[in-house]
Image 1 (cartoon, rainbow, N blue to C red):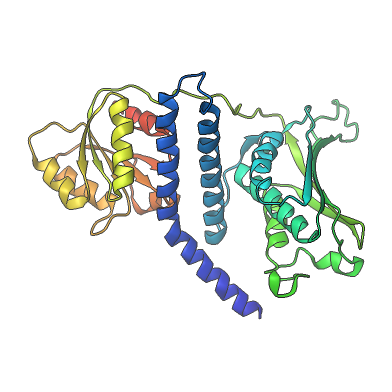
Image 2 (cartoon, rainbow, N blue to C red; image 1 turned 90 degrees about the vertical axis):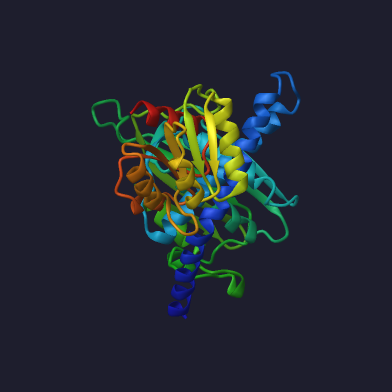
Length: 368
């Protein structure tokens, strides 16, 4: 049975990699066109905050996509100083629409919480998995509580701050877990849900917590409910504040050839770069791009997708540089692993990208 499950996981991993490109193209369109809408709305417009929420949700989905790809390919996450309260608040926004009306969600966040060194997408997935597990344990409804708090370390002679733990508790009033099964709940493929479960949710949670230097414990009793308690070591670093909007467009002045086989992303990229002050030429694929680069018009930079029919972006750049040596390029892709396909120091932009990420990458590439 486990061999069959492993084969299924391998298939899912290959499928995830194949779908990532198309899915991230869709997220790029959602993010980009939402940003264009934001620039057209006045600060007093009632829909402005809604547009920012759409943008934030798309970026959250992009983080989860990167995380799922990392799991399927065995890649480590990107760790940085993060505010657990911000990550939980962002994830709760997703949960409210998925838990159902019969589950009451309460959230208690410690305002004095320190930062942790972790991958934000990993933590989002941990909260989502635990919440979905809690929902399944409460088929007739109940209460789900998410709480953050500090757990001070013992006095170590320097104020005790170096060893403090940042704690995250997820509690439910569900059916509970029998004592004799609690030692097995984090095992891969072990499930108490019969054919309704894969036995991977809590195993994934355990692995993600451990990968981010945390520990997880369970306190449960049949008929009383379950609490999962997670502790991460606090860090002295500071998280980058969220909710502070950077300028959506960074002005420039160059002639840029955009090579993209997806018409929606091609049109979006053109809009973003034109609004940033650039002249833009368009190519729907490698052959169009080679024809454009042979024309006498000056092209300062090529912005090209990596995965395209007939020729990938790195091979295309090589062909174009035989025609115009020293041509500068920015590569775009829905799969961050596509960076590995090219042995180049050129700028790489992962989809979905925001307008400021793209325009800043173009600006840096031109100035390089």
